[in-house]
Length: 114
Length: 109
Image (cartoon, rainbow over all chains, first blue to last red; front, side, top):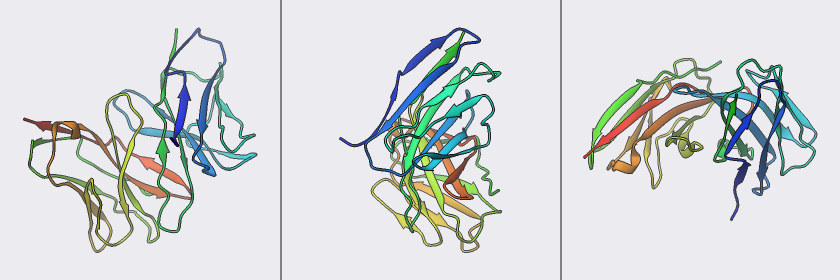
């Protein structure tokens, strides 16, 4: 089945440690995205990538880094510079169409920094 | 940036139609309106999208006003499984979605 996988579902880290969240898709989509969601809030865009080896900052990129070495993979690193890293992180992918760009979401990773 | 405004919560009786409104008064002429829903602790699920014309699929109908400043998502026969947060989204710049806080729909038996 085609889809987006994120691992792990739950992640715990100590304060000051960098942590990398995995996102893989087998939908052959060019564009991929990372969002952050805090309790009771909507999603906020962290980074996005429209094509391999290229990515752009979203609205809240500070304290995060990404890479896009393969079409299928878009890992997100939460660095120690991120002030409040505890959140629900969602990855998505899409393929540009003239009739609108439907984004497909993964199941999410809940990160807790202790 | 185009932004959206939705009521924070709504109630609906099971089996009745749920009509969820959204204002997007700053939308540009070529920006689509998308609707997603999110059940607790899961990734958002695509429902429907449109540009100018009304749209219908197996899940819902989307009614967009002629001036495109507002839209309504209609779930024709709501079930308990439709209880979720519904997001009205517009795309700004290229491939960037604006998610507001959404509407929490409570479907009651």
